[in-house]
Amino acid sequence: MRIRLHVLTVFARLVRAILSLALVLLPSAADAHTGAEVTVGLWSGMLHPLTGLDHTMAMVAVGIWGAQLGRPAIWLLPVTFPLVMALGGVVGIRQVPFPFVEVGIAASAVVLGAMVLGAVRASLPVATAVVGFFAVCHGYAHGAELPHAANPFAYGVGFVLVTGLLHVCGIAIGLLKRWPAGALAMRACGAVIGVAGLYLLGGHLG
Image (cartoon, rainbow, N blue to C red; front, side, top):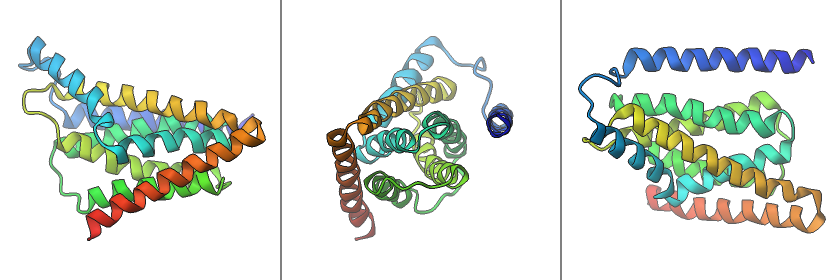
């Protein structure tokens, strides 16, 4: 019980910190944004996580790994990723220099795929740190590619929403661990994600 309360306290503080920073860095959503900009931003944000295989694979892998680790990781990892990703998105929108972000995104598929393949029983702080680091990379890419006609706030809502749905897909796959064949299939998913990540990583490094 004490551990759970501590986790919730840390999570609440993280949420407050991200929201505070977003309010400081992002312009007011009501400041000269038309309805068209909101619509463009929302749809663009929702589609962006689905336009890159590396994005999609990493987000699904987070859900699978969380399911493998069990409570509280099964919900903490999929919540941490979009929240920290939103912070990275703010940094990307502000065009703060972030070198090798594409390498980091491809590496996320490699590392997270390996975690799933090996069913790695990392501690909760380590797993959260790994997921959080890669979330910054993904968020930065989303923010840096914000369409000029889009409302940043609506765009952020869109990509966080779809990211959460991809995590839910991963969790659903992760629940197959209850059956021997399902556990094997789940680890096979990790292998596919990791190999695909290596291919993409080679493209960025080559």
